[in-house]
Image (cartoon, rainbow, N blue to C red; front, side, top):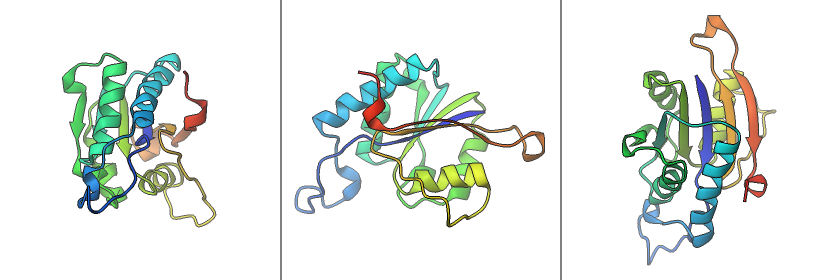
Length: 166
């Protein structure tokens, strides 16, 4: 399976008066533009997801929707997964990924969760020397073997937001 981890695009600043529930914060105008640039970047890399899983947070759903619309994927290509909620457990994400019967999967989530996921998939261990911080609208591309005994996970690409296609 090919897996891409995408951190949500820039959202409005935290404001407990306006958004008492942090999951309600929407993207900024820049964030909406960056989500479309993610779609363009993935398309130029020749990477079209079969399925996009996103957390319930408004900012991740809007990022995912920008990618789905920018790539002209059908509405069935986008699904919400509680495994991707902020602070979600890696094992829950691993189960969601394993349960997705697709060749190419895009996960849209939060930091530091996505960096922890990349570490979990690549290193399959907790390594304190691993220090990866994904920028907003940044991408990490991985190839995962069908089973652990059929190969090792491979890092395919890392694209920070500043290098997205315009």
